[in-house]
Length: 212
Length: 204
Image 1 (cartoon, each protein chain N blue to C red):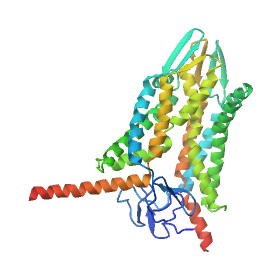
Image 2 (image 1 turned 180 degrees about the vertical axis):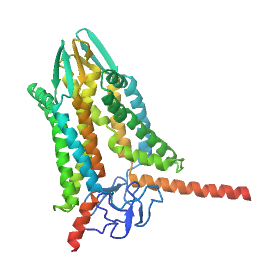
Image 3 (image 1 turned 90 degrees about the vertical axis):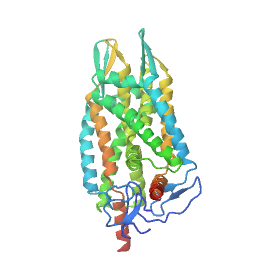
Image 4 (image 1 turned 60 degrees about the vertical axis):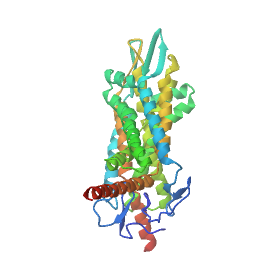
């Protein structure tokens, strides 16, 4: 393989579980052998989807001020933003916090489930590309920091209570990190290639069986 | 220093990492068009950086949100927000926002400019350090979005009519745009060029 940063050619050696290989020339991470990466990615992917749904619909923050009581879910944040003159910001939140993380989790599940038994599903190649491309654009953890900062701005104005939606966001953030961070790019592509090859040979043998 | 894939007439797929012969047009495994080096990376990176500098100016001058308190409008810019937290003695928050919204974008743009100069061969440095800095630039990029999300949450939550309500300012959009542009600039940068220069200078 070649290093992603400096293009140095390396021979890929088998490394033990839990170990990571680094580039000799520039010191960047080359690949890692993480124990049970597919199982973990699948499990955390499913958990993440549940948390994402929870974050969308469960009460996120409750604010009490001047006799008014406002409770919103994170999903409502987008709708209210849209209505109060911030359609572009509403879109940004919807895309970076809900839509892209959903696609990332969905593609993880779509990839990991069949690969666990070495099977290939149609469209695995574009799905993997999608998942890789989304990596930089998923911003749940940034939204988390943003929530904390805005809470600090709000405490002087009103009484704030955090709801289950907030904790779902924390769960989503952690499961996304665990699911995506647990998967090694090279290993994933190798497994896809092997799964497709296996599918091809089994298709050929089925056809052969019919001819006989 | 190890030989690069290109020196061995190979090209590594940017998507799946498969090593292919240099003359191959598409990766046989993932069907991505193969490029040994990203095309026009310095121009693209500089173009995106320049665009984000243009967006950086209104993002800091115009108000990022407008607070209406008992009929009185109060506009607040990013720096004013930092100052408010500082006066509240909420130093960690003030520092966090200052780092995420002011320092990171500025440092990122400086770093990208310097990296472009490096890969074009105008300046020289230890390529290992340059790689580390590029890796960091890519890593921290998203965190600047934090201010946009703060505005988003405040606007959605604080809507009590005339008593107190918050509306987003023009700077929120320009700021978000600036962050996205710097992220695109980092994505189009090609760190391998720095190593190509380093290999050339050690061989000659």
